[in-house]
Length: 160
Ligand SMILES: CC(C)(COP(=O)(O)OP(=O)(O)OC[C@H]1O[C@@H](n2cnc3c(N)ncnc32)[C@H](O)[C@@H]1OP(=O)(O)O)[C@@H](O)C(=O)NCCC(=O)NCCS
Image (tube, rainbow, N blue to C red; front, side, top):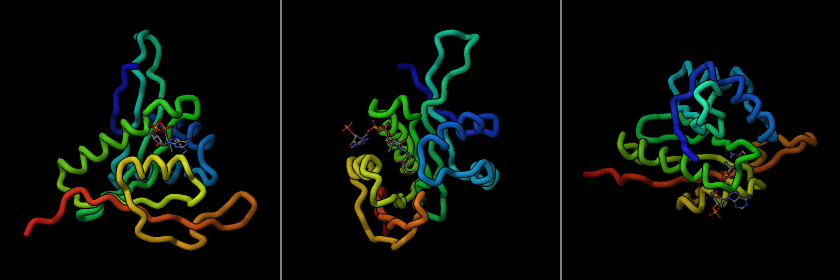
């Protein structure tokens, strides 16, 4: 599969929202994405290169990260439901880490629902470690609350 990862733009958001709504218990709103783009967050779309020039390149996944001083926070990583378990999230994570390292970010943080076994397995496979729990951080569809696991990966130790 020929893939390309490009900065997310406003024109991507119709497709992004379709995947977002199919993929999350509490999907981001369109406003969450537009605010992130306007604020200059890192946001990328992973597309498959279409063999037919007349056809658009289908969106397979995306990610959004908040850069803050020497840390990045991974806010959203999502792969289209029909393309899961094909290594696409791994490709996105690798690009994120390479970009973070090239810009000398020291750590990447993220929060994840404690029930989100696929995402936790993905992060653990990239050596993210649990550093805490945020109690009742997320809402559930039934009105209840769910804890978040806070995970971190150290990329570059600060030099003295
Ligand atoms: C989490 C998510 C991004 C993983 O995407 P993906 O492209 O299917 O993941 P990959 O194929 O790259 O898998 C990478 C690793 O993650 C883990 N993993 C992914 N899906 C898994 C599953 N269903 N069960 C267990 N482990 C899983 C595995 O360790 C896997 O490595 P392996 O295939 O060599 O065993 C995808 O399931 C998704 O979009 N979920 C909904 C949105 C979400 O919860 N995002 C995270 C919070 S913002």
